[in-house]
Each structure stands twice: as structure tokens, then as C-alpha cells.
Amino acid sequence: MKSTNANLFAALRAAFPADLDATAIECADGERLRYSWRDIERATAMLANLLVSLDLPAGSRVAVQTEKSVEALMLYLAVLRAGYVYLPLNTAYQAAEIEYFIGNAEPAVMVCPSKSFGWISKIAFTAGTQYVFTLNEDRSGTLLDRAAHMSDRHEVAHKTADEMAAILYTSGTTGRSKGAMLSHGNMLSNAQTLKDYWGWKKGDVLIHALPIFHVHGLFVASHGALLNGSQMIWFSKFDPKAVIARLPDATLFMGVPTLYVRMLAERALDKNACRHMRLFISGSAPLLIETFRDWQTRTGHTILERYGMSETVMLTSNPYRPADGERRGGTVGHALPGVGVRVQDDKGAPCPTGEIGNIEVKGPNVFAGYWRMPEKTKEEFTADGWFKTGDVGKVDELGYFTIVGRSKDLIISGGYNVYPAEIEGTLNDMPGIAESAVIGVPHADFGEAVVAVLVAKPGAALDGDAIVAQLKRQIANFKVPKKVFVVAELPRNTMGKVQKNLLREQHKALFA
Ligand code: MLC
Ligand code: AMP
Image (cartoon, rainbow, N blue to C red; front, side):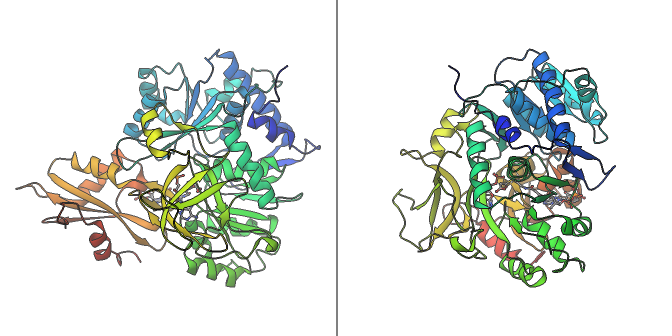
């Protein structure tokens, strides 16, 4: 007898409301289209049938670098539905970055906008990808053209909970990006936990204004609404004024701290605009206590901050229900039900309450490992099976976790991760640069901003603007330093290690 189908899509679909003609997604910009639950059912079936018709090997990856659109969300759902593996790529990634991801993941299918077809298909076909489809913001492109000929009935592929559903690439402190393999079970268990913990209920309406190529927008937000049969008000791009104008029609909002900072800068943000809101959730980067307090004063709402990562989906959350405790600014709340979170010292022993140490996690949400990197995977797990997050924090006597820093050299800018090692590698390959140090400094809008400090090779003259222009052609724009300094030498300790703390201190007021 076949076991129950653990396909995440099957669970999401089971939550569709009885009235399939009700609105599931309302686009707040562009042509202001409305999509019903029936549209989702039919479009995902047609797209899934298209994938099935390609006769792809089991476990094939479908890589996608497209602008945010409802059709792109449908494509994600269709990949789940058909039982393949979804690989989302940030739209800011440039050719060299895409080349690495495609070379590493070897997707069978690639989907990109028509305008990028030339260079992306070249990379993809060289890497052995069989099919490259196009999908544009205006719903044109070969993907939908082909899917239009497919049947709108499709039986959801049978999956076990531990079968892979998605690969999310995360950069690393050393070496190249690693593909975190998330299973159907990882994502469904987390979505179910959050549905309960955040009290999703009938009538909830979510404003979806985040990109859909990372955990926050693609999984936490979309799964949340779909698993509750809730309507989404869909923004293809975040615009603070437009979002505030739609708050009265919604009950839930999820954002990275920059989104909250930008909305606070708008006069229209007030208690009246938030009169029907039930919950504001923040994550992906630290929410400043000033933002938390200003939001309370202006809107009467206490932002719920949670903490997670690509390898684990969500880990901790401040309480939603008063019975579970208050929402404490500056903390990321409690370990989610069923998720183990502990703080360990460098020797691997538990830290006493209140002491700072390494955050390690365990649970049904934690990924199985990095794609084709068994050694790296082994390094990132403890002998007793806990995943080392690379985040540094502490827990108080009431079980509230606080993130105080990172053992990984990572900058989080506007909710996007930037690994200094990657930028330094790119800089060090440029002519005239002897060495570089990339740091994050406080930034009023992005939380942290990327800054590069360079040393020229003897006799070379470095032009900061030209270096920035060159970087923009090579790496995603959010990784490009907002400021470049040229110095005679980098500060080093007695071991010869660059003292980034001194550089951060020196430049801390640049954008504050
Ligand atoms: C854009 N720019 C950024 C930036 N975003 N610079 C630094 N950091 C960022 N995050 C720069 C561009 O390079 C460009 O510069 C200029 O800003 C305008 O670009 P834009 O695309 O028009 O920007 P905008 O639309 O204003 O985008 C800002 C933003 C966006 C905050 C809306 O960055 C965003 O959506 N962030 C959310 C990221 C997210 O979803 N993270 C979740 C990860 S999941 P120039 O010089 O080229 O003009 C995760 C796990 C978890 O972390 O726990 O959730
Ligand atoms: P990513 O690899 O893009 O999924 O980013 C995950 C990282 O974002 C985590 O390891 C943390 O460093 C950081 N992060 C996520 N949520 C929070 C939060 N609420 N506060 C501080 N850092 C966070």
C-alpha cells in the first residue's frame, strides 16, 4: 500500500477553500489581476503537465531566475506538484554567479526572462541543461505558451517527507556557495508549526511584498497564506506608499526590517491605516529596537520578530498569543514548538543561561545537507546531529533568544546576505589591487551597508568609481560596496589577521 502523499503541494492544495472561485491572489500593481483558487489549481496542473511531458529524470532541478510574478509563484508550486526540485535565483545575480549555480546544480530546466535568454541559455546549455524556457512579467514567454497546450488535470506526484523539494544557495565564509537541500517534510512541518503559532485564521489576508527567491517571501509568506486558504495582496515590488494604502484591506504583513524603516518614513502610516491588521512579522535581519518602538507608537502594533535561515526555515519566534508571553524587542523569541535551539560554547558544552555562545539547532525543519558537498555538510553538524547556524547568541531564563552576532563573516544588507570573502575574492582578482577587506557598517535604511577597504599594488593608482562600476558588472548589485576606501595598509593583529573590528569602528558613522 502506498504511504500518504507527503508532497508539500498536496497539503497546500488541501487547504484551498471550498469556494474555488474566491480570490486567492489580488495583484496590487501592474494590471491588477485577480487569481482564483481554481486558477491556481489549473495553472499549476498545466505547468506540472508540461514538466512531466519533458520526461525528466527523477529529482531533476528546475532553476528559475525571473522577476516576481504570480506566474512565477505558480511555477514554483507546479515544480512541487510534479515532484521536481525548485531552485530559485535572485534576479540581481550576474552571469558569473548564475554560471556557478547552474554548473553546480545541473538543472534539467531553466526559466528566465526573454531579455536574458541569450546569455542564460548559453550558460545553461553548456552545463547540460536540456530546456530553457522564458517567462516575463507580462505573462508572455515560451513557458506559458507551452503550458497552454497541456491538460488542466494533474495528479500530484507522490513524495515521501524526506524527498528534496528545493535547493537554496547560500554563500559561505570560505569557498563557493552551497546549495541547501530542503525536503517536502522540512517545509511542511515548518509551515504547519507557523500556522498554529502565529494563529492564522479564517479571513486573514496577507500583504505579500517580498521577493520570491528566498525563504522569507517564497516559503514563510506564501506557504503561510496558502496553507490557510488565505488571500494574498500581491506586490511585485515593495513600495512603502502603495503598501500602506492597502493595509486597511489586510490582516498580516511580513517584511525584512528595511521595509518597516521605509514605511515609518511615510506620514500615511498611522493607527487608522492598521485598523484591521492582526500581525506584523519581521525577520531575515536584526530589527532595531528603535524601529520596534517607533512602530508601536505609530501603529499601536507590536512587531513580532522571528529568526530563521535557508538551511532550516524558521527556528524561533516571539509569541503571538499573550498567553505564550510578551513580544520582546531585541529578541527573536522562543524556540518554535518541535524545534530544538541551544547555545553552546566553543568546546561544544552548553552555555549557562544568559551566556553568549554558538546557536545550534535540530528539528524536522532542519535540512539534510548541502548539495553534493558531504564534507561541508559534515563540518556544519555536530557529532550529536545539531546544525551549527553560525549565529552567536544567548537565551534568558524565560527562553527568549537574542542574536548578538555571527561567527560567520556575514553582512546582512536590506535582508540579503553578503559574504565579505566572496567580494574580497572578486576585488583581489582586479588589476592594481594588492588586498582588500570588506566590512559591514550601520546603515539607516539597509541595516548594514557593504564597505570595501583596499590596498593598491606598488605603483598602481586605484579609482574607487571604476572599481564599483566593474563590480556591478560582475556581482549582484546589493553586494556592491556603497563606499570604497584606498589605504596604505590594512590593520593587522600580531597573528597577521586583518582587524575588521577596527575598520568597522573607524567607518561606523558613514551612513548611520
Ligand atoms: C537594493 N539595493 C540594495 C539592496 N536592495 N543595496 C543593499 N542592500 C539591499 N538589500 C540597491 C541596489 O543595488 C540599487 O543600487 C538600489 O538599491 C535600487 O535597487 P532596487 O532593486 O530598486 O531597490 P529596492 O527595490 O529599493 O530594494 C530594497 C529592498 C530589497 C529592501 C526592497 O532589497 C528587498 O526586497 N529586500 C528583501 C530581501 C529578502 O527578502 N530577504 C529574505 C532572505 S531569507 P544601484 O547602485 O545599483 O542603483 C532569510 C531567512 C529568513 O534571510 O530568516 O528570512
Ligand atoms: P539566509 O542564509 O539568507 O537564510 O540568512 C539567514 C541568516 O539571517 C541567519 O543565519 C541570521 O544570521 C540572519 N537572521 C535571520 N533572521 C534574523 C533575525 N530576526 N535577527 C537577526 N538575524 C537574523
